[in-house]
Each structure stands twice: as C-alpha cells, then as structure tokens.
Length: 192
Image 1: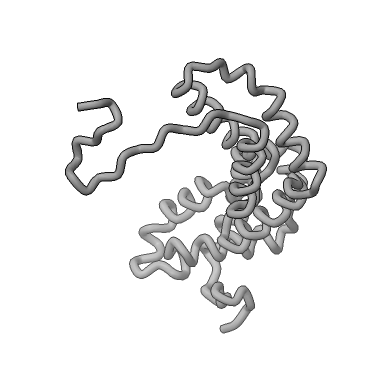
Image 2: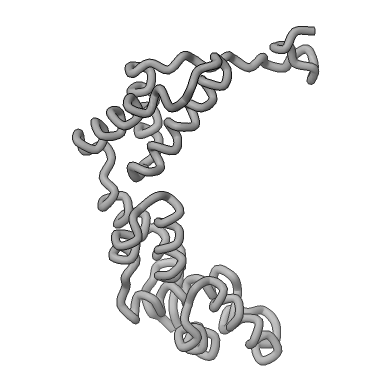
C-alpha cells in the first residue's frame, strides 16, 4: 500500500497533494477565501500561512522563504479594499449584538479573529440600552429569568451566573433576570 492509498474503503477519496506555492497561486487562494468569507487582515494572513505551511511540509521547502510573497498578497488585498478591518469589525459586532452577545464577548470575538484591541473595543462599544437589549436577547435564547419554564426564584442565581459568564455586568444581569418578559426578542421591539 502506498502512502496515498486510503484504508477506509473502496469508495474513499484520495487526498490531493498540496500545490507548490507561487505568488499567483497564493493570490488566487486569497481571492477564493475572500469571496466566501469576510475577514480581517490577520485572519487572511493565518489562512494563507496554513496553506504555505502545508505545501512546504509536503514539498520539503522552508515556509520562511514565502514570507515576502505572503506579505505582498495581504497588502494587495488591503490596498484594493478587499480586506478592511474597520468594516469587518463593525459588521461582525453588529451581528453578534443582534444575537445577544455582550460588549465584552464581542470585543473578545473580534480580538480572536485578529482585529486590533483598540478597534475591537471601538466596534464593540454600545449604549446601556443596547447592552440591556442584548442581555434580554441572550436570556430569551437561553430561557433564563422571565423566559424560564421552571421556578424563577429557585434558578435565579444560576441565571445570573449564566449572564455573567456571557460577559454582562451584574447590574444588567439583575435587571434582565428580575424583570418581566415584556420584550418581543425576535423583532427586538418592546411589547406586552
């Protein structure tokens, strides 16, 4: 059995050998990735660096030899406007807020994606009302507090802890858990 044969069965696909890294190949790989996903520069750099490492491991090359090509491809994507960390951070922060994420969780998610700390803080900053709305959405999604199906008094501490772990302040968590279920969290409007 050769190293390219698969032992999982007759119908299993064989893995293709990774292509050799060339500037054109890396540019096409970046374009293909950016067609499918919005990404900050650091994320694009990580994706392309993984491709380089995989190819170099297979072909016996040094990944450091392709560092300048990687830098050129990422800088061209930034210069052409395909990669914009500010735009990415604002759009991703808005999406996460609509899902009920706290400002702290939004900033941590953006930082994990490679957005700079100051930019992540700026994009994740929200008003008190927006933070309260996000906490209500999170409580609704997790069936906490007013949306709990069990005894609210018995599960109050657990509900507060769940919102605190989600990154909400204790004051916001108390306001949501002790409040009434008067918000239509699907549409984000207050109703009774």
